[in-house]
Image (cartoon, rainbow, N blue to C red; front, top):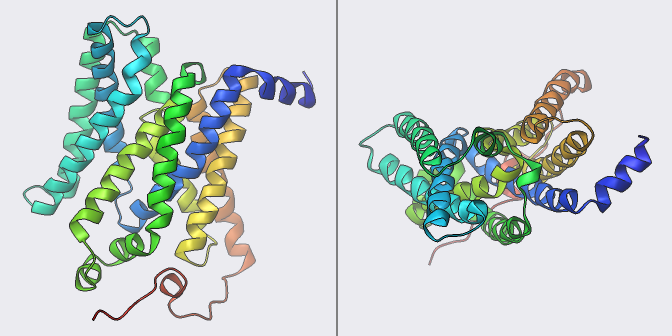
Length: 303
């Protein structure tokens, strides 16, 4: 099979068309949220929410069975959205009140989410193949309904992530400064948590709930190796996310590999290459002492 024939089949196959649309949207949206999580040092938050999303998938299956739906998978993504949003808000509330440290709250999400998810999927009549599809991603599981849900969720993520970038950057860079500047810190914290939950729900069809955090974080880590500001880091990470998702899906179209694992390995491989090459090119010359602030945040006097 030559390259042109492969690309032709890739573009004309309905299954791959749906998977590519979802992959491009995931590749754009996931690094936007990842940039904020890296800035806040909450890189593992997406991983914890991903485990909770698995419980939501199982609850969607149970609801589909109770409603007599022929396709048990029909309510999987809506169930994941609800469960991951509830889990993200709970962890933010626990973190804010300080009764439990952040890492303990994440551990509760990890263990509780994965255990409840596996248990409920078993009760709902799911198989190991179904479970693996959600844990590590599956092109075959992307339906037309999933495409439209992904379009809507990605539009919401990009709208908030890019539209509120100055305020969210200020919050993630220095929460005390954001509070002193009059920003609604609690509401923005919850918004960041909800956006992380929606990102997990959007991405789980392509990369799976266990690997979704990598797609949020690794493109940002690569971009940070050479980007000069917060804005350029986010933009570069979005481009890297799209490239690794599309290339990863193309590889899995030719070879029977897990799409989630392939995409993540590509991203990590790119990080390894850039981290080796970057020192050879020398350090960038910065002339602006406040690189992250000047082109991203507009500071206004409060009357």
